[in-house]
Amino acid sequence: MHVCLVVVGDFAPQMLRCLNPWHRPLLSCSWNRLCLFKQYLFTMKLQSPEFQSLFTAGLKSLTELFVKENHELRIAGGAVRDLLNGIKPQDVDFATTATPAQMKDMFQSAGIRMINNKGEKHGTITARLHEENFEITTLRIDVVTDGRHAEVEFTTDWQKDAERRDLTINSMFLGFDGTLFDYFSGYEDLKNKKVRFVGHAKQRIQEDYLRILRYFRFYGRIVDKPGDHDSETLEAIAENAKGLAGISGERIWVELKKILVGNHVNHLIHLIYDLDVAPYIGLPTNASLEEFNKVSKNVDGFSPKPMTLLASLFKVQDDVTKLDLRLKISKEEKNLGIFIVKNRKDLVKAADSSEPLKPYQDFIIDSRESEAMTRVCELLKYQGEHGLLQQMQQWCTPPFPVSGHDIRKMGISSGKEIGALLQQLREQWKKSGYQMEKDELLSYIKKSEN
Image (cartoon, rainbow, N blue to C red; front, side, top):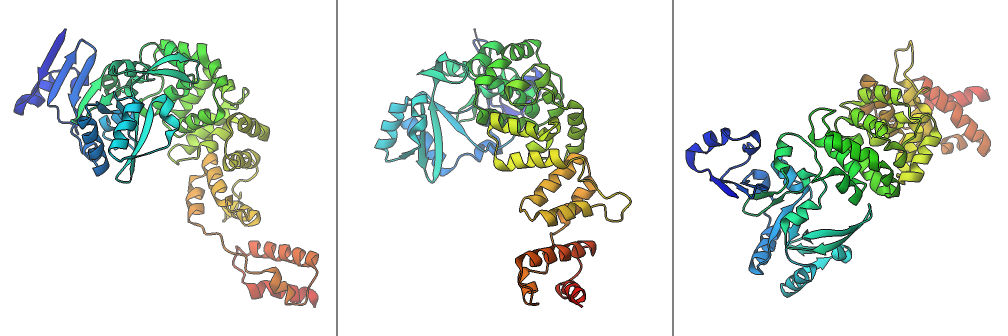
């Protein structure tokens, strides 16, 4: 079956409005041609400013070379999804019918430099043109998968490559004339804000168990409201959650951080616990979900760091240590988690005081660590102290005006005595609201000597 509808001229908008919603154009699209091929290939023409902005000198040279050598080249995956949403992609991946060997011969003959050959066995060649890197991957079929890695076989069949991708919204290709190639209704799902696996969810997940977390991540990015899941998808996740135990902590942490800063995070974290995913990704089995509910409301709209919200699940500092053992988080992230768990109940605003921010300011002054201000701001987000957060972000840490050298000049040489005096003067300075200057502080030493 081959059905083709050509839409041209001034009547195009009226005709397109008669089609299903998923046939309608984006505001940034020009629909020149709409075609349904063999009931599974949907194509349209995209001519948006975001798409046109990709055509740098490097990309033009690259596409001209592939045309000259008679190899097909298209934009693939997430970049296509972003362009259809009217977003200029940060990274653009390319797919081609050329094999790695053919690409290497082609680039070498053209005098084009190739870098980073680590991806070659998986079909990826990185070429550098006009000071830009272009990552190009041969169309592939997954021959053998173990839930983490895949042995691949190269192909020239675009649909076969699309079949091996995780989600329908990530399985589309875009030609350089603006033609979209969509084999699995990815554009329809994107317009309907639906996240679905390509084919059967269970099969896609068992090919790479990290796709469980990718599903949650894209749900938070694409879908308008929580709770809009296919039952088959949730069943497949629950049945295969234990497969995440074999995935490296670093890969899990990359996905989990993106979930924590996305939309519907409260719904998704509860789902992670409901489907028994949590124990396989380093989260505590006895998590404080009530605290998490409260904190997720507190931080909403205030761009918390991933660890700020995650810390609400932890009851004790050791939970952060266990997370680190599983996910290999950074030292900064670990220290932030421990700081919040340790101080969330005790480091609070001053009650019955005209200076509610002072306990936090004193902590920063006493800490003398470069990260103290950042951690306190994250704690204020955690506690829902939005007014104090704004004040803290405008506050500059004042320098303590007295040094050990100043005290030595007064004839005091004992290091122990100097340290004790500095601490006493620091307390006086804090009581003054950090207003006392050097001479006034040093006068306290003179008075005590007299």
